[in-house]
Length: 366
Image (cartoon, rainbow, N blue to C red; front, side, top):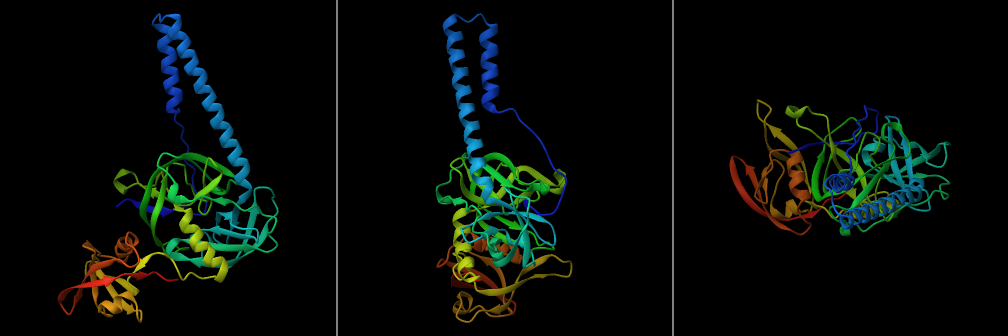
């Protein structure tokens, strides 16, 4: 499995790189061929028309970029916590700002700077939902902040052009561009000093650069709508040099962001996550060498999915839906791809015997 890490909100070394756009390369090749092969005037005219048309497209695309950036940047803020810097997106007219849980960490008060002003505003924590790495903070007297428009992420398409906006490396109001590379990725964040980690379902993979400080910012389509919240970047395997893998980043889809943020704004907690769960407390068990052996059940929620299926404290979960679960993280990844109400077979070890129990999955709570 590819290793992932949150786009952290501390500082780090920037990575830069540039490739000539494929369209531009194609036009240069076409013009060179037309000018060097003795093509007739009609061919040269066609080439010139094609070049002009390509230029119009480029101008229109640049204008779209400029319009979207000017429209959305006022809704993207910098968040300063006791442990570093991150980004946030203005959620409503009441001063609520949505960001990542790993950006806020354990803090309850923050400094917020908008792109339009260098004067810091004070914000307080509204609520955190760690399983989806989402948090909401609120700026007192923030009614002048400009809320972003959120897209229906279920309609996002692979290949769609997107812009990532945030404050990477503390460089405020920074924009990178790319495309939606894939949809529906399940990725895991590791445990860090600021975050207990999370398994994120249904994320959007993007080639737009996501660097330290981008976390909690905006992944925006060319209509100026937020399609996701940039959250983490892929890590190359150690045998390939390690470090961030350029052009492979992930964002929480806007539909998930809105579902969680709406509840946090209203009550400060989440009761309807839309995520499948066994409703148990677990820990990873290891052998004497430290190799993971399964997921030990520590607690079982009264009336929850596991209790109704007969799972007990002390059981060791070794598989779910035919997939092995050697660690708690692996269990979370399997459950992230299932749905509330699904009936699945759960393999458990109890007193040396292996049992297969049928569980109707419950919902992951707050």
